[in-house]
Length: 77
Image 1 (spheres, one colour):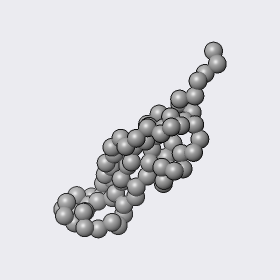
Image 2: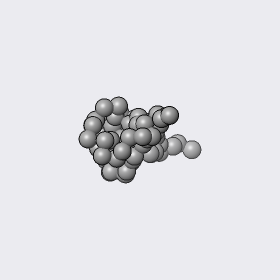
Image 3: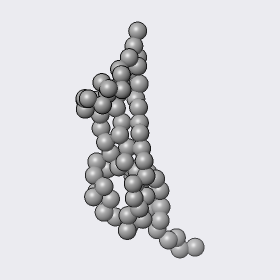
């Protein structure tokens, strides 16, 4: 009996001028019986997105982070 699991791989890519610390995340659904060669050969059930580790926003493109990161805005205390 095989089960489906969600796998994620992420790595820090860059810090933008607007204060976002971006990680590119690749997420896919895989059966526990799939070999690594099978996973590498096919792009089905896979999505890639960008996440800011500071404000937790997620976008399909890193160009979509066009506003200042809310986590890096100065506070008026």
